[in-house]
Image 1 (cartoon, rainbow, N blue to C red):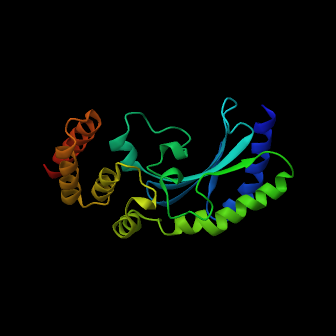
Image 2 (cartoon, one colour):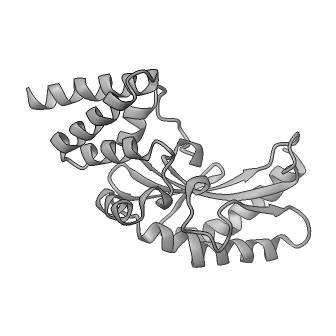
Image 3 (spheres, one colour):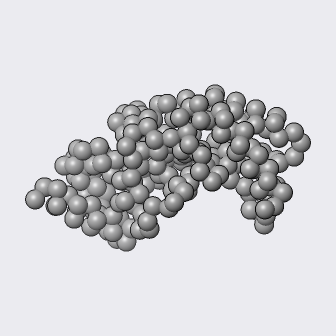
Length: 207
């Protein structure tokens, strides 16, 4: 284990005590909270790669994952540890949590306990209130219809919302939205694959 990995381990142990009280469970270098079946809120401490300009720094990341996003949008199995990279809603797409500039990189120098306090302040004032507005699929859709992609969805946000609508149980409208996206993007192999997968699912559920 490297020196920076040791420092991350220390930060994780300190943050665990705080986040456990908020309903999060620690696994590896992430914390997750299930607020609705199959809907996870993720906080992650990611070390900057040794070859990059973020070497020697650590990032406080956050994201939201749902089962249906993973099932319809990804080709691989659910990983044993779900990270922000597996989330459809991610801090790197978010523009409403701008007080802390979204990407929260910190140098791993000085007093680590001070760094813990800085991270807890960001969690309290920015990330956790953000999560509180997006606890359910319905609240995600409601916020999207008010604020659009800025809630943290990627450029394919229309497809993301269509799949979430489908997953919420409104299968006819969800499938119609996905079909509309497919017709616009049918030369894109990714959209073709997603459309075919959800079409097969829709046909099974309506047979």
